[in-house]
Image (cartoon, rainbow, N blue to C red; front, side, top):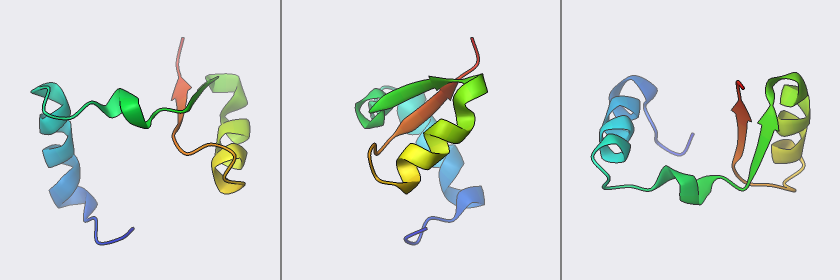
Length: 57
């Protein structure tokens, strides 16, 4: 994961997003409903999208 240590870094990333220092929406290139989760995984694996997000609505 390119040097990312989840337990250390994810809280840091969350704080940056929460404080408005980082716009995570800029990384989202596609959204998928929950029932199409495998399509989202496939799209990222095939590199047809970079930032697939699964939404729970």
